[in-house]
Image (cartoon, rainbow, N blue to C red; front, top):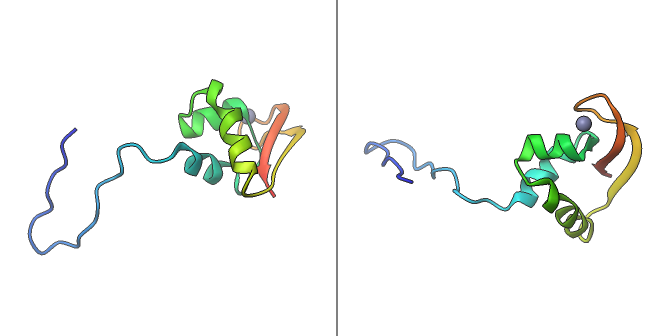
Length: 84
Ligand SMILES: [Zn+2]
């Protein structure tokens, strides 16, 4: 991966981090809406097999609720996750 250097005089904006912590994206995804696992996967790119581990870890520092409800992403009845 190559990053293009900004021309002189432009604001010093850092390039996107190549491998940001996936937990950040999960938190962002379920912060304002309730999403099922497939929707969290689609929005974050985090493999489904790893989602529950991340959700448990996130739950150690903030309250993650898991309820049977309508997913705000796909509108299906599913087990949805949300940060309270
Ligand atoms: Zn969904």
